[in-house]
Amino acid sequence: MALETIFARRSIRKYQDRPVEKEKLEQLLRAAMAAPSATNRKPWEFVVVDDPEVMAEIRSVMLLGKYNAPAAIVVCGNTSRLKNPISEFWVQDCSAASENILLAAVELGLGTVWLGVHPIQNLKKRIAKVLGLPGQIVPLNVIYVGYPAEEKPARTQYDPRRVHWNRF
Amino acid sequence: MALETIFARRSIRKYQDRPVEKEKLEQLLRAAMAAPSATNRKPWEFVVVDDPEVMAEIRSVMLLGKYNAPAAIVVCGNTSRLKNPISEFWVQDCSAASENILLAAVELGLGTVWLGVHPIQNLKKRIAKVLGLPGQIVPLNVIYVGYPAEEKPARTQYDPRRVHWNRF
Image (cartoon, rainbow over all chains, first blue to last red; front, side, top):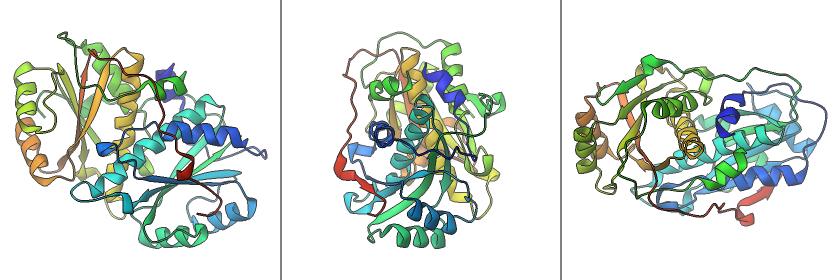
């Protein structure tokens, strides 16, 4: 059930030494592209990395993401698909797609961790260089993907103080 | 299963004339607050609207959202919880929480539609005024919630041209 999956999703930072099947990576992208987007513009591109050499390059760039995942999905905005006034919505659209990837991964027995890239300028440049991104393709994040080698209990961080009824 | 839920989520714009139970609205918020956030900062606040008068005020403000939903969740960023360099991550964190709301709603038999507010300045101001938001609370979106009065088939908008392996 979706609620259990939502609670079971945890950031995984230790991975088994086992590749992720291409069909499973494609399933993650089917989930990603089922996300809503502003005026259905779908301003996204996905770079799937499973080549160990490219993974090593990504790890060398991600100062706070040296984890041993065998694969990654880099969710990017395609700014050529945007126009004012909705141009900034690409971050929201790509974030919804990213969350779908994390949740679909749980169902497939995979672990993930979402590592922020945008809006950190020097990180964006380095990831763009590793992946050969043209100027209009902006990396939002790096999502590491692999079979988990750690277990974390399901949880919500629900806090009733963050909930306001009808007026703040 | 989560993948089916992800595909079943569609933007619903016609609602039954039937209120949403408070327990279900709280379940949506449990799902929202299970989302990941940058450095686990949880920069979110949620205004749940189920008072018909406040809903009418929201509808009057949402020029592109006149739908007859009986309830709404306004997902907001709490900028007082942020500090550089991660301040801009609140949009991503709150978007992941929003997607969790949409997916949990499917499981609960509810329909939703995500209506963008941030970064449209005049819309942000009007929603803030309706809800009495203090200056540090920024509305990201309005998510209408209700029992659906229309059916849409499950789908993904998967497009293999948006997928790039190892290099763009």
